[in-house]
Length: 204
Image 1 (spheres, rainbow, N blue to C red):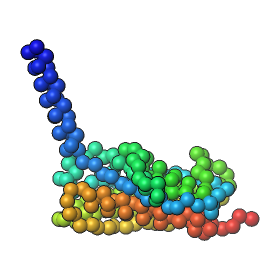
Image 2 (image 1 turned 120 degrees about the vertical axis):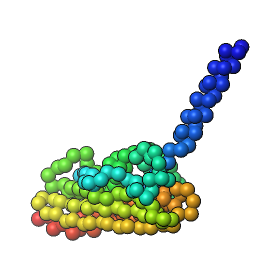
Image 3 (image 1 turned 90 degrees about the vertical axis):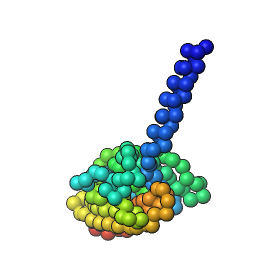
Image 4 (image 1 turned 180 degrees about the vertical axis):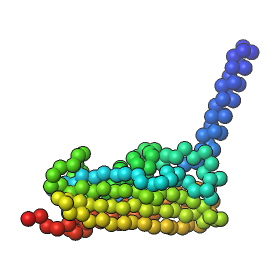
């Protein structure tokens, strides 16, 4: 009986240590608000590729290193679909995050995303150059910079999207999540693939 009691206390202590350890691991939650579904590009196809060109792959800046101590580097990705509500899609690295988001964005325009390139089909290449969160005093700072290049049959259209946004920190990491979500959603939805496609020379 005494041995069983000691074992129970041992298991309980381990459980408490595990819970406390998990509670100290900060998360970065990014909620992407999808554009309304459309059929404006239905019947069209596109090939999409993404490359992470950041010289520094660190997401959290030095100023935010204390509240984000032990941050594992992965992002809790949440989709917000208007009246359908929000739901956690998964926990991803930056590359997977961007691939899933742009695929969702393109899908909502009605365009079909091909798994491989094909002659005559437009190709959208997104290159990421900056994706970071920092804290200066009581102000959260987010930075996102990417380049989108649309090519078809030797013709190319390039657009650059770069922003730095700020939000005052009130408590915890709530405002950090809000800032990154707002900045990320705005930067992705600014792409306007329909306008990019119309910028390409008409095929004869």
